[in-house]
Length: 423
Image (cartoon, rainbow, N blue to C red):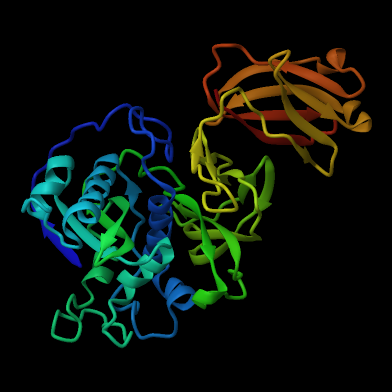
């Protein structure tokens, strides 16, 4: 079911203590769940590349046509909409089954506005039955009749398509800038089902200048018929939205899984306004990951900015996010195994290991913030090198985040790598 409403109140209320983009807010651990985050990244993939999304996930239907639903800007996560959607899903799952009004009779509008007090409009999609996020997004986008035939674009509700194409139009509406998704499980007609709520808002988001609106992993199963030559069946697909108003391509797009970097490739949308993916075989263990894009101005964008996502649902993995308990630098071979970076917990520093030949070319090592502010320079690093190793001390007051290590070599070459550090 789908509802949409617009009203004109311009009110700005901060929604708590800000964390990094993609990280839970203080006091709101568990928001969003993996189900909710995955639903958001899929929703944005469709918003920015509707025909590509249709062809990869839905099939060869005459819906999401460019004349009816052109690409629109992505939506960003909002905690108040997440809470409104989660609580409504819990309410439906526990008390009354699927309906837009709260089970106590409160209207959808009054309920959403009791959480979400900014912006000038709201919209809502609800659904139940499907466990997988992509199945529910498909359910909304298809707006199908009892025979599985999708409603035409701009279809008004009638006896065949009870909601018209209202869910589709909610997902593709240019009016929305923010989103919250709610997932909960409950019993309906004697069966255990998941209940989904998608709440949209028109208010300005605190992170809408961040180049990675959302990222997550999703599972593509062969029995769902969704395997394609780009998104393999029975795989874990890592998926990140990338957006900038200039529509410029990233210099690089990576997902770092257990400290190892993998290239992402554009699958839907345009180079600067699209969704990048990587499909890997499923494993039986939990993996941690984050996304990182370098834009055309050599600025690095990380999602989540401070923590790590986990492959919830893979093997025995039941966690979906962690901040990391210690300072951490991902360990990986760089520049053809000539360079390694690893955090040494005993000396509280970044241990840099460099090939003996390259060591002789090294002039200086610099540490920068992610925005390019110089923090420290080790001007004569070779004095501290022991068999190609050098320790870069980290001060105890160093804030968590992503930093840049830059190595200047004597022939003019520059090596530059990101250093994610959390506490």
